[in-house]
Length: 190
Image (cartoon, rainbow, N blue to C red; front, side, top):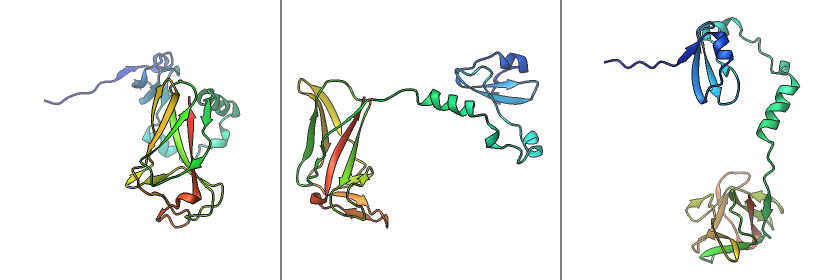
């Protein structure tokens, strides 16, 4: 037995007065096209039909989109300021089991980022360069564990007596990093 998928449908006026759920699809029976909804835009977003797109090839010019559209779009997606704090950079040490850093306060972080900061030229990087993609032993892009107790927020990066590495800036080849050339920094986003 064949299964049939039927989506919500209505004429153009009905679709124009409808705000669908996030990801909902409706059919415009007048235009014979589909509309995709984001949960907040009245009428959703109409998809172009292949038969209409073929006759309009090359007619869309992105510079014709009004500036207020872009301003509103940016405002909608960047209206929140995310508070961030960072630790004092400390030396990396591949001879330790783990690196534990205590940050004051007991607020739960949204995420924690770990970066390496070059102190002496190494692996093609210059002094002051930040490396966000690095590894320890067989682990790429290690993320710290974090816990909160009476002392504050604990950030713990497992090292396991393994060497730090990064892709060489110029060649992309995995390159072992010298401990004395790098510092590690935690950024905490709340």
